[in-house]
Amino acid sequence: MNIQAEEMPAVAVIPAPPTAPRRPEDLVIHVTGEATGFIPAPGSNGKPITVIGTEAIRNAFDTTCLRQALNSRGAPGVTDLVLNPDAHAGYGAPIGCVMVSPTHIYPGPVGVDIKCSMSLLQTDLPEEAINEKPIRRAIINAILERIPTGPGRGQRSVKKSRAVGYDLGRRVVAEGACEAVCTALGIPPEWAHRCEDAFHRGHDDTVAALEARIDRIYNGQFTRFEGKMRQLGSYGGGNHFGECEVVRVQQDTHMRAIAETFGLLDGRIAFLSHCGSRGFGYDLAENQFRALQRKFAQWNIPLPGGDRELVYAPLGTPEANDYIDDMALGANFATVNHLLINALVLEAFQEIIPGTTGTLVYFISHNIARKELVDNKLAWVHRKGATRAFPAGHHALRHTPFAETGHPILLPGNPRDGSAVMVANQGAALSCYSVNHGAGRAMGRKAAIRTLDQDAIEKELADADILSNCRKYPTDEAPAAYKDFAEVLRSVELAGLASKVADLRARFVIKDADESLRGAA
Image (cartoon, rainbow, N blue to C red; front, side, top):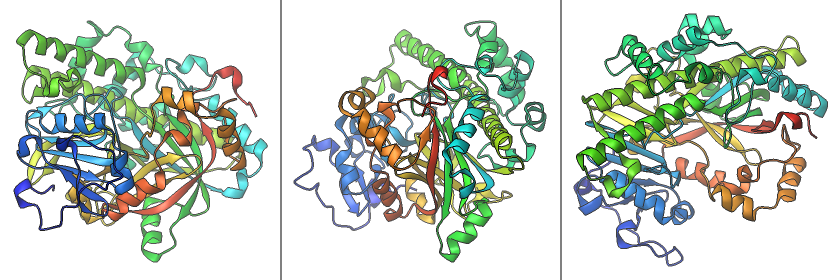
């Protein structure tokens, strides 16, 4: 795991290059390798912050992001803090960070979209099957008849969704992707074995704790339960998406063997999805932030770095138990949401191209806290905009299909530059067995809308023959709004964390768009 400050290896500490923006002394990144560095912990007390990124990536970290990292590292009970190359300012803690604590739970380093995740569906279709634009357009429309997009939209806004009422919704959030829930929703039950976590339990490791928590919140402050359940099987807004891909497996013998274990098919069509726990998880998270902030004000507890978004609860307290239960409820929703989306996507492909088959490659989260062994001690590993990266032989992968290879890591880039499937190396121990969750934003949404050229965005996608369901692709989601994906992946590989197994090349994209624009050219 991360090296103790007093145990740093004997390497030359290279100062930031003269061209780098001047930073306060406590925010200087000390370089230990081509894509690794560290920032001393506040007061040089304990393990430093591990930084993953090439020179170009390190120089692009802004002051707010680095200040949030220091605040998070200095927070009570925190033993490790990692900044991944996609890191940027977030809610309390940076998006793109890993935070470890054996004694406290933190909502901020999970975020408001509990268990926002990636999933990948592999079909048997050759890429030639969707070369023609009318075929892709028909598939887009078939997907949109089944899967709503955008904030607040649910099953009632599309014709061919799955109906989820109170009773089934209650089972979804209490039990996750159990066989009964999958069967009721038309999800192949075997897909649950391709999930990082198919289900989450309450603070005492029981379903009963979650059922009791549902009763408390449904009868109290959270009265929109049934409405939120109608968002199962839907994409949100913002950076959530569905993307049709062509798989390009790396052609060396080792990576081809790993791809075979993953179930990736070279030259075949796959579908990549990014979404989370929708309005249900958001309400749970927002309620937890408000409740803990009231406690801090009531008890006059100092906030880490004075940041109201870095509230916390010591493990074993009622406040910690409530948060862990709510996080599990949101996480179970997110898991089933993804599996249902993939079942509906496959159904849409089958409607347009009868006989299509498909299976889930993997489902993996990047906004979650999980109990894991860190330095041989059980701790809560908070991954915010960071994804788990367990290599071959890791104890947590025993009895899974990935015990001898490491599990798939799904990293979205952007439609223009593609996405990637990676696998962890043993060097991932440096980053608490975590990597970035994607490219990471290079500019805020308002800045992107203000500065990027809409016509250039449309031409870029048209030149690449990438379709979408939007008349105008969202400017704040344009490829130029994100970091250089190739440099992000280069950082991960140079740091020895993971290696690329396959590239994913976009053929069409599903984003938040008004229903009236469906089918736009």
